[in-house]
Length: 435
Image 1 (cartoon, rainbow, N blue to C red):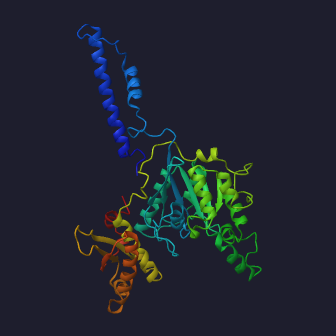
Image 2: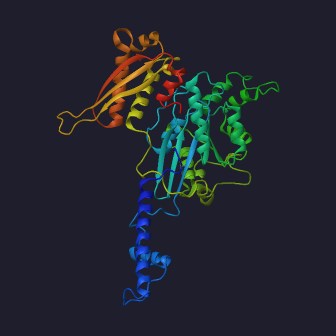
């Protein structure tokens, strides 16, 4: 996605400006001929081009008449980056208030970078969130390489990096990416997700008094994973990312109204009343903000996102089409129906998507999708005895598709073998994982 991509309103602005200059040239030429005696004018001679443009601006009152960008509007990219199974997709869904991304309790379910758009006309801001695949330390096949390329691209494009972790302070497993994170001058916010697990983790820890004993010989990564309180997690991440503007605990599974999610959204939007949103979290935890900062004010929050016209219309939620989300939804059902590695070997392609025709007595969306696996043995498991298992998938997927599309759906699923597709560069390019 290119920052320089022009939206339609910008095109209209440029077109109107060209027309304006043409009119100005005409008036200027007309005025010159008048002063030269070719044309007699009763009015006083019109001045130079800049005076003409100024006069026309006043005459036609452009503000509101054509789509002139608001000089105070802000728009920027925010990349959600972290290890697998940190709840990045759940957090994005909570931030924008829509079930945009497939979220499961299985790690590494996100394969593509997915754009989520949140526009606040009241705060004059458009936030472009990029949900990324979970970071992998060492890739095992070409598909994972493509996924990590998506993470790297999102990191490069970000105006703000949102580092997503959990109650165990799970670190980013890629040392090089983590080094770049700390060396770059991008604005950073750490989000500690899944704080609803705090009580459970504490209880589990109490069963074995020595389980979380700090030993000088222990691996630091293991110590991070042993965090059992929000305070410990905040302290750990303040040491790991010392220049983070804020370290915000939340529970994304609680959705849009979670106090931590609300505080994060308010901060990113630049208000209103960022201080109140953070006070609602309770007493500040040491390390939550930069040294010497008690609460972040609206002025600081407004500086997070650069001044820029919006890239999308206010009602836009994403740049992906319905076919993409239908495929992701079906793939998400596979993770609920099959265990272990099998869902990771599957790719879902939408072969046909037919809208109902006008005048149909029974309007219905017809979707034909292929589930691609790598081996014949995997196909047998997906289909199940007598087709029972794939029928279960179809029933659940159809119900979810009807909820997504708000219409009746006829779903036809076919399981096909596409040998070793996860390792085939040409196929991965065709499926959108590699450029």
